[in-house]
Length: 101
Image 1: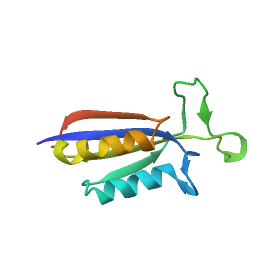
Image 2: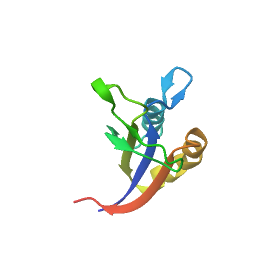
Image 3: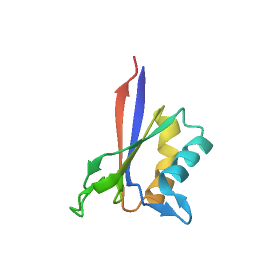
Image 4: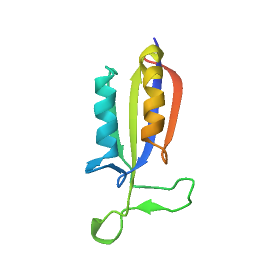
């Protein structure tokens, strides 16, 4: 069965007001009736700015990476892309076709 996978790469410290951005994104995906979404914290990573984000001494984070993954039909995912692009100006958003087995 063909589906689309939406992947959004953020930083843990990204926020919309007082709310973590990854939480806001997941809630919007739910409002758009996307079949499911998962937020995965990253241990270490870097983006276009070249700054390495990782867990530091005593487990204190310095803006670690966060990945949101959602899978659904293309017809359900495409309508939310414009809103997500506006919401995530610094993050990376990818979309790829996949086969669910």
